[in-house]
Amino acid sequence: YFVGCQAIMVLTICFIRPLYFKTAMSNLENTFKLNAKKEYKERTPFVSLLLKEIKCVFRSPGNVFEYFLFTLLMPFIVFSYDKLLLTISVNQAGNNMIAGSHLMIVAILAMLSNIISASSISRDGGNFYISKIVPVNYFSQIAAKLVFNSIFTVGAILVTMCISFIYHNAVQVILGSLAVIFAAIGHIAMSLDMDIKTPILNYQGNEDNSAMQKNTIKSTIIGLIIGITMGIIVIGFAFKDIIILPYILLLIAGMAFGIYRIYMLVLRIHMQYDKIEM
Image (cartoon, rainbow, N blue to C red):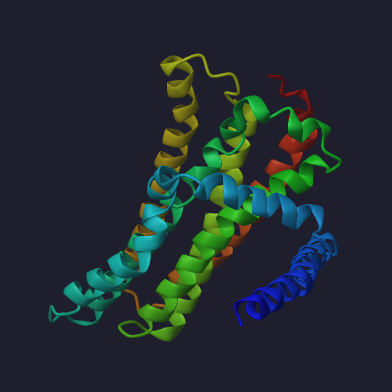
């Protein structure tokens, strides 16, 4: 009996062992072939540049907190602000003034969401030379930076617009939001223009870091001026009968400002971008 069991065990090992190794190697070969057949996704140069901007900014939580805090909090701040003010009983002129202050808050938060563009070129630092050698024209590279910032700013404005329908007139909300969107795009283009004009690419300590912050501070101040001015214009018409007129004027001015700043940005790229040196 013992000898028979030993014989069966030996025969089993002789048959199972080759089958085991064959199966194991077969699985490895199939896995290798599966990975070998995997293809990379094809993307256009513009989409690749856009994804690069997203990865470079969002790889650091500090960047998200520094540049997109106002963008993320915009809907909540505006909603809380409206809910607080509209609990006060006022006449029609008072409601118009509240609507103007609402637009001012939205515009200020939208402009503060654009300060990331004021250091968009400088943040590349020592890697800026890559933009000179990649087979993508300069206009596409800057357009990716502009679109990247616009996606988050415009997205936050649209979400805020939907929430604002709860408390404000729909026509005023739509016209005001469109005016802020055009003004914000113009402000993004202006911020990019600032950084192309005076980039800081070689960091030599705190002095150059402070110099890089000058464009950010300048962009912030201009953004505050734009937002406050838009609110004051609407509040100034609070006692007029035509409450839609200031929103139409702001929409026209916002479109003109946006188109003008994009045109100036294109000229800046054409005249100066190639001359930027490390």
